[in-house]
Image (cartoon, rainbow, N blue to C red; front, side, top):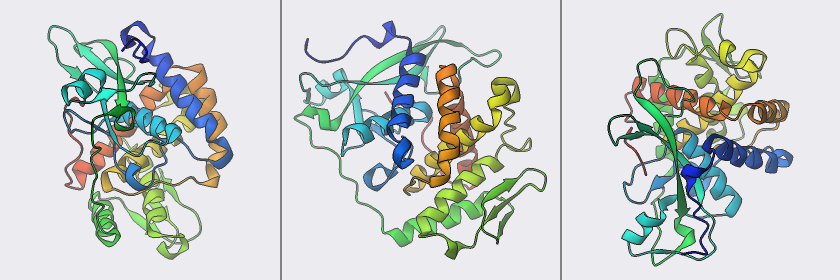
Length: 306
C-alpha cells in the first residue's frame, strides 16, 4: 500500500488541487478544442461511485471526466481505496488517485457535493474535505460494470421530450445559436444545419443553460462575483450545464471550433481564482437540475456519492 499514491487529501489545498487538474486538462485540449467536459461513448454519462451506485455531481463530475480522458479509462466507476477493498478488489501499486471534493457540515457527520465556494447565509457548511478515488481500470479483482447503450432513436426522442418540457421559447432560423436576454428566447439554426442530431442537442443544451440565468428561473447574476470576467464565466457555466444535461440524457458533447475564443479567457479566470471553477460548476449543476425538474425528469440523486 505504501507505493500507492493516496496522499491524505485533507492535508492539501483542495481548491488549488482541483483547479490545477482542470486547468491542465483544458491546456492539454487547446489544440483540438477538446475540453474535459466533452464526452462520447461510455463517458456520455456521469461517473458513478462503486459503493453507492450514485452519480457524482458538479465539480466532481468534471474532475473525473478529465481524469478518464487523460488516462484513457474505459470505465465510469470510481471508489476510494477502502471502497474497492470492501469489494474484494485491490488498487494496484503505483496508481495515482484523483481528487474529489465534499463539504462537511457542522454538528453532524453529513456531507454534500454542493460546489459553492462560499456557504449560503444560515448554512451549516463548515469545511471542505477531499477524497482520493481510483477508477475501476486501476484495480485488480473487479469486473467493470458494462451498461447496455440505449438505441440512438430512443435517446434522441428522450432529448426532444426533455427540451420540449422545460418551456423555453425556442425559435429556429438563421445560422446562429444564441439566447436573447431582452426577448427571453432561444434561437437555433434549423435542425438540418447540424452535422447530426447529437450536435444539435448539445448546442441546444448550451443555449438553454444560458436561458436559465433569467431572474424568473435561476437568477444567475455574476457581475459581483466575477466582475469583468462575468461573460467568460457565464460561457463556462453554459458549457458545463450542457455537459451535465447531455450526460443525464446519455448524449455526447463534442468539441466546437468557436471554443477557441473562450479558452484563454477561461484559463485566465481559473488561474487567477482557485475557487472560480467551483462556482461555475455549482451554477451549472443548479441550471441542469432546474431543467430536469422543469421537464419532469428525475435528475441525479442529491445524496453523497462517495
